[in-house]
Image 1 (cartoon, rainbow, N blue to C red):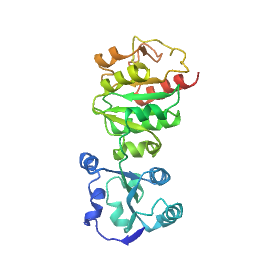
Image 2 (tube, rainbow, N blue to C red; image 1 turned 135 degrees about the vertical axis):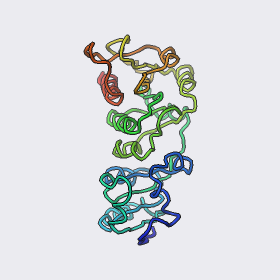
Image 3 (tube, rainbow, N blue to C red; image 1 turned 120 degrees about the vertical axis):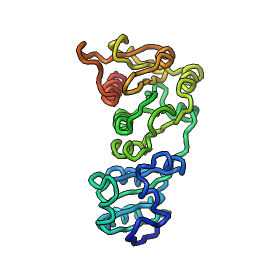
Image 4 (cartoon, rainbow, N blue to C red; image 1 turned 90 degrees about the vertical axis):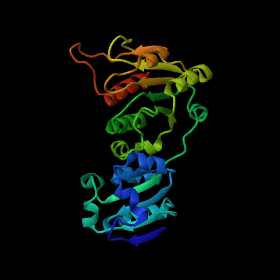
Length: 268
């Protein structure tokens, strides 16, 4: 671990902190930003590599915790004055504590399936565009102990700064497969692994999930905030599930729908 005092963000090593809104660049460069105490503590407790931290001197006790645990052995710690840190976008959220981590390798579908239980519960996401919705979905998935997620390429990255923050760092505890072709991935999971795929829809589906099969994993599929599942996605499903609600309410937020559906899937 190397500790460096800085009074400017112009150092090349600090580029990720200067470009917090450059989501595509961060993804291409293979890193993500965690901000705030909960997300950074979760990162330090994970198996992911921490490239650097940018902090105020007040956070040195946390650095010492990381040193003691070995989480920061290969990490550069940049200590900056409060005025500099407070000029970074989102100060009220990052509280002068930011870290850059290395994106994890994309696990294969085979490994995702093999790591789960015989009656595992998975979540698949089609076209989830909003990073904060993604973050809340991740938090819900961690809360209900899902065995893994499949995220389509048309969805926001789970490792966007806002997704990481809203998930409270729970993204770091999840197995997430990033699929270039979500529907093909789900077809494979059905045919090769025997998954039961249940699509969620505001109208027309069963109002209760069928009892789980102890030898068949369940995958809950959720569609976009604006339009729900595409017709192709819905046609791929073994069945459809609708959360009961009043007829004059069109739908609930997709992250809330994930929580309700996961409760239904895991309570039996």
